[in-house]
Amino acid sequence: MESNNKPCSEFSDFELDMSTSTELKQEKQLSATQRRYYSFCRRKSFAAFVALRRNESQEGGSASWCCCGQTFIEHSSIHKHVARTHDSEINQLTQATYERLLRKLEEEPETEQEREAKPVDISAWIPDISHISEEELKMGPGKVLLYYFYCQVEDPHAICAWQKALCEKLHLTGKVRVATEGINGTVGGTIVATDIYTDAMRSHPLFKMDKEDFKSSDGGAECFTDLRVGVYKEIVPMGVDPDVISYRLAGVHLEPEDFHKEVEALLAKGDLCKDTILLDCRNFYESKIGQFTQCLAPNIRKFSYFPDYVDQNLELFRDKKVLMYCTGGIRCERGSAYLRSKDVCKEVYQLKGGIHKYLERFPEGFYRGKLFVFDERYAISSNNDVISDCRYCGRPWDHYILCSTQFCYQLVLSCPSCREDGHTACCPTCQTKGQAQSGAASTLTQHKEECECTDGRPRIPQDV
Image (cartoon, rainbow, N blue to C red; front, side, top):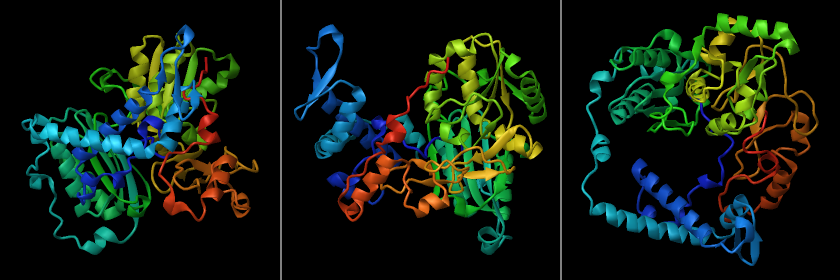
């Protein structure tokens, strides 16, 4: 599933420390609704704690925050300080807020959403596989499927329950997002199991899917750590209400052959071509190891930053023809719709089926390097080009590993030689932090990464 979840999010998305909640300790497993409530209370408590330290007496209207005898003039700085220093207070405030919310909810009648979340009969949508052995479902050659489908889903909770039951029956792992606007998923398993899954998806009355809607690559259930199926507002997290910017506003879909011709014509003109932009709407760590020749690859960390990137670089797109692409096509659906809503481009096109489908047709085409994927493989390849370098020695290298520093979720390009020399973190700052943590991991409080990798990169780059 196309997503943005390897490098972690901004400080507004701090992980919850569930162990501090007496209410949550009593729960062997929280429901999705309870987790959302607790997360909401955590964010509310964090914001309230920061707001109490705001200094309103600044001249000229500039804001500052005072805490622990220090003055902070940047919003991100006070957030970092509070997260590092006042975690226990935040947990106490969160628990108190959460308990008040639970008491309030107990007094309210059942909501329509809660009624929709109740179990439904999905047996009619589960295929009969009694003639297939468990060994065939678990053992043998495998593959990973990537797909999405936009349609109106009246009962996303029922679809979610069906997907969970279907995947578990077929011993599939992966991630599936369901929303009222459709479904988006990537699952891995044996060829037998994934073929049954594809047939089940295509035979469901809601999803009018073709075989071409599924992209496949070598892999299996081992490519994911578990199975995650859930109901969300968007099937790809752009952060814009799909009722406001709908996929129906998307750009013109180009088949791989037509897209190839457009890129060929663009490259033939070279620097003389001033009216066309080849736009990669993926994250920077994806385009870093593979991209189309002469593309514009925004240095953004998450797809939810893409709308802000467009807003801050509108003049770049004014009166231009834009050729967009992404991994499998889904980010282009919403991304092109958002770009078109600004009414500045002459034309907006998108690669149908994404890089996946293009590489099936043109493995030695204009896309060079590896294709990043959101699973344990990190990347797949169709050509031998290496377009990225080792972070430490600068030699050609494009195999990602996770930063070795505990609780840092950045990806790092470190060649075998540099890893042998101990360079296993995403940056020198994180490497030093990791060495200081060794032997004391059990006493650490979980937090997101705070190092050169994020501090040195603008959240929204200016490419105008």
